Each structure stands twice: as structure tokens, then as C-alpha cells.
Image (tube, rainbow, N blue to C red; front, side):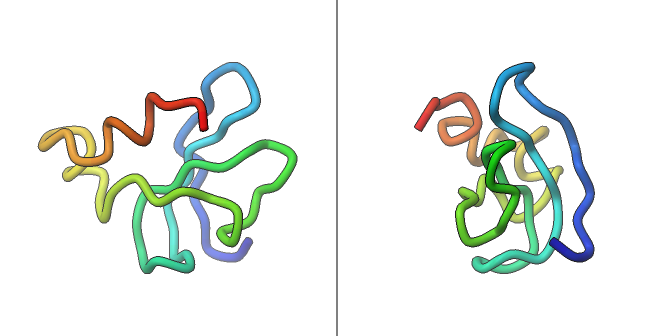
Length: 64
């Protein structure tokens, strides 16, 4: 993964990262074992959308 910024993890097997992925630039969630945008879920277009507007909170808290 090029040009990514690791935001955090869930102290388990999920990590949250920010960068240019298959669905465009944004905040993504992926598995520690497969840090690849092809296997990641897009949460929101920006950190502001996620943290302030609550967009993507359903994806961020799900365990799928």
C-alpha cells in the first residue's frame, strides 16, 4: 500500500487507515493480515465526515 496513513486499530485484527483506495481517497478499515485496499471497506470520504458527521460509523463498529 502506497501513500497510506495508519489511523489506529481495534486492539484485535482490524486497522483503520487513510489514503487512496479502490473507492477513491478516504478512510478505510482492513484486516491486519491483509493490508490491501482490495480487501478493505471504505468508511468515509474524510476524517471530518467520520468524526464530526458520523458518516460510516456503522461500518467502523461492525465486525464483518
